[in-house]
Image 1 (cartoon, one colour):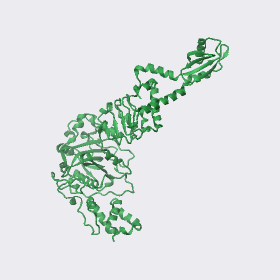
Image 2 (cartoon, rainbow, N blue to C red):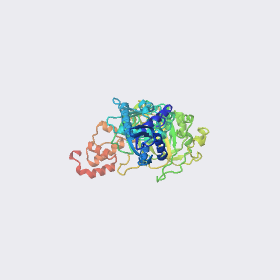
Image 3 (cartoon, helix red, strand yellow):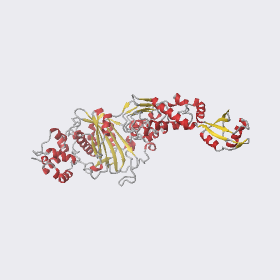
Image 4 (tube, rainbow, N blue to C red):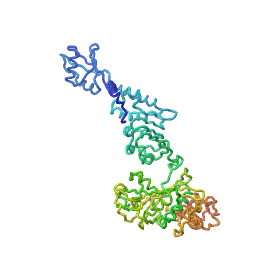
Length: 593
């Protein structure tokens, strides 16, 4: 642990360490000469120095520097000196006693520093602990480097140490090399303080990546690393369940707990609840439809405070990916890219964040026209939707690909002014403006407004093309994608927009069009298919049509028809196959009476 030693006391501590390590020895059959003659003889022949020698009866008592020296001296038993055969013996082996004493010292230290009421182990400012300093545990780099692993080993064997929080502040740490074993000893740690140290590099923390899977709070104040612009995002990357960083709440803890609660099925389209599922799917489908046809029609969804940013991820797909672009062209995007791991100028980072309709419109016109394939190739896309209680809204993240169909409406280089391409080109030639397929990730933050919704934030990340965005398990059901509205119909702004929980989310794309016309008119249900109103309200017309068709085909009652549709992922073919395979086991009361 770098920096733990006290420079002013290093000589004293070195002497203390030397005294701890030395071993007491005895020498017999020496009487025909003086003690000084004996010491000189032994030093000259055995190369072992004996100090503090004195006579006790017939034996000379002295000390050698270490156990190794004592063992070396024992090999000279029987050597002739002044007419006699000398006899050596070890009288007090401090190595065993010293180790035992050190273990006792460290155990007592751990218990003294442990606070039962808060379940916190205070390991702060270790190099100024009087007892540790007095015992010489910081007397050398070698000694102090062994101390923390020894502490962790002892802590793991102390059942009374139930630790949820650890304080490691004020230890002059430049990295965590010396304390890396903390993750093995306390993998379920909840709170960690590393404040007032000298940690300056993210790489030094990589050894702890995904190790503290329950870490809730991290304190890093007064470390050089906290001034880095990537500090917050890197800490969230390293510690996936982090909620509080330096006293600032970064995430909704309850929401995070729900997301990480098991069991969670890995699935192509993840929706926190049914309302968000149908609403967000309609929103995304219709948004992309207008994005490909006429982006101006979307501007009514952005307010003066809304933000849009574009980021280029220029990393290459693995060559093992069958369908991937190993020579991608990002020329149309680089001048607008806000990838803060590539753009070092704070001014450029701020300038490339578009805020308000005018700036967002300019960005829309500066990137190529596109064609998405969410409807005809749904298995090439995946989506996650979660609520965002802080703004009473929700967040949609879509992964997939698009085809670039036309050059930008305006030249992005000219519209953004002269660029220093060497500094900002991400390693690619900005003159290479070839139209091609691109993979992307897009995240929208949607906020209800009482009468509708607005897009508060829109983040588009462009990547080299690689397919698919989702590796479908053969046992998974095919995705159900709603029908879309006609993008040729102009978008009206300033009119009511559907809020979450309503099947009319498509109205967020075109408020003048009713839900039925946006995603298909609701079908006429069979009189025998009587659904509870709250259940029917959650289903979109396509789901109702599938449900009605299953009901008529299988003669199952409403409850069992719904169960069959839901369990088959709203796939009619899968549902019918499942029904045929299990019809003999279905109870009589499941059918229409």
